Image (cartoon, rainbow, N blue to C red; front, top):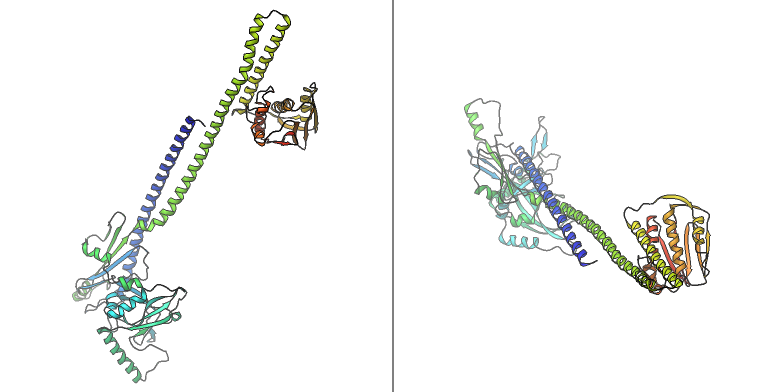
Length: 596
């Protein structure tokens, strides 16, 4: 490949790479834009649904005349039952201006409990039968926990939780061993009051509390805990003195213990970070709410948004009021519930973007490779044709130079020569050289036609035995060569004119380059044509070179020829999709191919 073609090839390859890269970037950008915006819309829609769910499960509250919230309110505010997604932070607050009530979900976590009941959990149904009120979870306030733990206990627990898992995968967790709920006096918010903590050693295979190893207990202390313990003692004493003993086994008193299943775990993250200011609570403090706007989608930074929803609820709605005092009491208990949610659509759709863009990139890389291979193949073929053209030009110049020189010299001699016989000799030589040039030109034209894209086959049936015997007959007058034909009497389907040209070139080539007094064997059996003849040693490299156009082996330079005969044969066989094989064994060259 010359420098001009190389530069042109390099320029086109760079253009292809640039175009594919630009299209790939546009596709990735479009995909990323669509995925990001659809994720943002879905997040906003889910945030609205989640806010409505929180509101629906929080509005059924009851505020007593003394201003207490008598419900499981904070657990609902904590959104325990709905379940947060992995990237949406939620902050919920409930406020009542008349009673100056403010309850929020910051610095709180929900503890999932076994079903429990106590002597105070009995209630009566419509038939005055005793039933149990079950509670599946309560919330734990970080500051209630931290104010009950001494610094020494905190540091010791921290050492356990910071210990790396051992070689068997065992690690430490913190559990609430004993607790009470902050509704022991008839009002409250179902806040868990931890009384005793314990360190458990567990691993991923342990599901139940009963499977874990108990390491160390920590008894907590506070004024509220002291009050609870005092009430617990009184209740147990009253129970012992009571003659009313039911058949059901019940836990007596306010203090409950961990069950055999749920571990009452306080997570490591909450233990260390629960006291930090909630980001969304901080946002609500620094950004005053427009009470006229009940829903807003605000941008925090380039890829983060704040969704705020404000609800007004009065849980004690009635169809009518019997007095002004009843209406005032209704209005006094109206609450404002505000839900803040942080939305990070980029973070949410990052896995999809990575996978999707990777697929797009791989697809365009594949397309680019395919295009580069196609272009490279075309340039390679072009370079081969260019090389053939140069070789052809050199060969034609070489093959025409000699006969032209001979013709020119003999013409000069013919002008000066007076003898008849000598003139005839010069004329014969000139005619022979002109005939050689004519043969060369015709073969060049044939080869050019066969190489062109317009070459077409005219397939028809003919008898191959008759064809081979007819061609062999042309060379029967050559005494030094013995040609034998052994062919099946069979019809084949091919282009008769082109196959005749191929057979003739092969026979002519064998006659020219075989040794004197040698046999040339032509055969066609089992659909395989072969021709073999004795000749001088031929290397494996020369066996491949001999099929190239305008190529003559150095040892054959003395034999008259054009160097294009086998190239024509190869091109004819290629058009017919026949594959030629060459073999040199024991001094004989054999060329064969299967006629399908």
